[in-house]
Amino acid sequence: MLFAWLFLIWSLLCGFIPLNAGAAKTAEVILISQDNSPIPFKLLRNKIIVPVRVNNSKELNIILDTGMPSSGLLLFNHDTADELKLVGGSRYRISGAGKGKVAYASRVESVLLTLSGNELENQGVLILESDTMHGFPTDGVIGGSLFDSHVVQIDYDRKVITPIEPSEFKADSTWEEIPLTFNEHGIPFVDAAISINGEKEIDVFLYIDLASSEALKLLVKPDMKYSLPEGLTEKHLGRGLDGDIYGQFGRIFSFRIGSYVLHNLPTAFPQAAIRSRQQGADGILCDNALRRFNLIFDYSREKLYIKPNGFFREPFALN
Image (cartoon, rainbow, N blue to C red; front, top):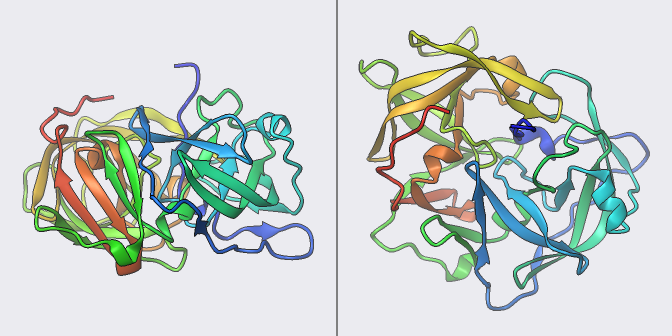
């Protein structure tokens, strides 16, 4: 492929360090649309791509990411911002996956974002200053603007996302409820279990990263609970805001979330110091596993609801 794919993590929008006076204002997200219109999406290498307009602009292709806990939008390319006549104000240092130079972004305030008729007002837009993501096949990333204020249902069978007012939501008995735990940065974690080689399951604590195209990442660190499987290969795992990510890659015997088990799971084993800065995380649950379920994220009640979909029994390719 011409371009390595981005592995966005929790630190994209949390923990900004402003380089000039004044902290960024966190605006309340208001969904102006009253009908909670379904938002169509595309799956591009296991990433959810939603159409977003910025102040009535053309549609941009934006990644939906649980690893972006703040409201607003991050644009990868300052040329896109120039085309949209967005002029940044405050400048910030931001962190991401990878090993390389520190990334910087400027922020534009009070922007209107539109997602297929759903309008989000008073949003901030961060514009990445570096050329790290130039040529990337998507334009940016969005997360907290949807997840923080709405119950978000993701239907992979129909490829639509439906934002629901929390007061109007109640899951029926066909959904399995999975508790969510949020850390101080607003990142959702789940309890799961793995078996590396078919031995007894090991409990693991994973954070959810919808923007990562793998199925599962288990972090390599001194206190890890598992042993690495045999037959791993070295692989370039992608590119984050801070540079390239390398690690080992192979398969594990099984992965369980709730009562559901996935077998022969392709799994990456990156170094924790490069891939993740999340304290207490054993690994990262990614979209190639999650897309086998239809999902409902209810941050207000700290719940994830899952239901197997038409992709549940699809064999995993070793990519």
